[in-house]
Image 1 (cartoon, rainbow over the protein chains, first blue to last red):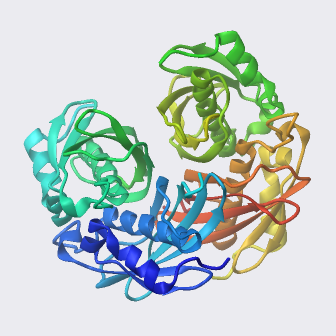
Image 2: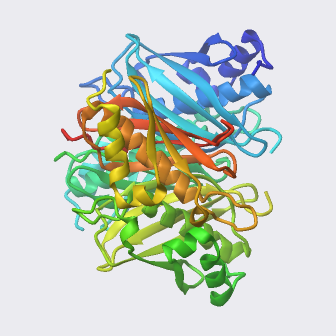
Image 3: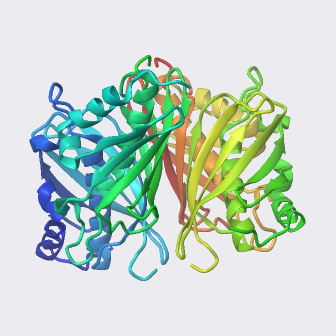
Length: 137
Length: 137
Length: 137
Length: 137
């Protein structure tokens, strides 16, 4: 399925929300299959000073927004999250995360999308999916 | 089931993580049934300047940490999140959120807990549950 | 919130689907807070002849239909399942299961409901929640 | 990652449980990437005589067992389900379903796997994922 938004238009949308600016997320890639979002580590994201793990809530945020923008790439607009599910696979001790987002199904009333979060070495840190309300709903 | 931690000890634990300090979460109540965590709104949490909704990722963070500390109250220590599900019920346009956390089941290998997030008027904003690894696992 | 359906009307609806007849589910209680559905064990439901555990898919079916009928009690009609989450707490080796269903939130576009499954001794076996499309959606 | 079980050994395991025999599931393919399980429709599986849709609980069962056997292919043994999440994409009115299962992550304490359910025309009907306890846990 082709995209309705250019890289520049989607990147601008990704950076717009105040919380996204705090997360410093930006679009790293966009193609017909998936999108990639990049997020640098910042010290306030951490769940433990000793271990330096990025907090699960930050990873959930990244899964949510990456899935939303995978849908936005196709529909031209974001879609409110109905529900979100996140699996945590490994502690995230890294300088940067990359999240790959992909639409599973664009229905008329519900859209489903997933995201996979990798650390700077490419190791799987978290993944998840959500149900979203497409603009038409 | 009785608690292993006092209000002061749990509150100190709630405030410890750098990300929790950024969220400015604090313990508001602790009893044998449930715990209550309070989180004030801050402008960087918002998903849209126009609407002023608190971002779904921040709500997911609050569901996650409230469920974790409901378990910590019983076990004396936090429990890493295996997976998390969050349902979004209403946009959160509010000065403060309150999250009520409750243990569903403390198993030997898996603990399950849930949290319900209310706005300053007591309206249901989000809720969810997760699976966690108890210290014994 | 008051119910739109009588015990008899909801029980008739619970028993109607061919798969529900196979599960032999029936309404055991209906009040303003929640509903209770009863399901007897049958040998084809089992996941292991040696252990005699009721299969997780059967428990998921029970969580799903109990949440659907908790919504139907309020709205007068069932609601298609958008997505479902089930947590498994204990192996179910029992002669009968009881599932308690409760609406979490009846929105205009999405309804959320939960169910808790107990064995014949009242021990917690499984629980879960789902998002559903209310008739108005 | 290579498989620990042959097609014949995994197929025998898939068919063993009484509930699996009722579902009449069988292994259709096994390779290093994924497994495919086939399930014919039977009339007792249906959620409505009028529409003939296969019940969501049956689809949840198929997602669960397909994810479990994707793990079993790698580990040589099944893994109890910790929790299961299923998204419903389309009503399933079909003579046969095929479910493709894939391991997302084999951790030491938790394994995560997903399954995608297609109808006889190859259309996406449901998908989901779960957390499981690997034999080593």
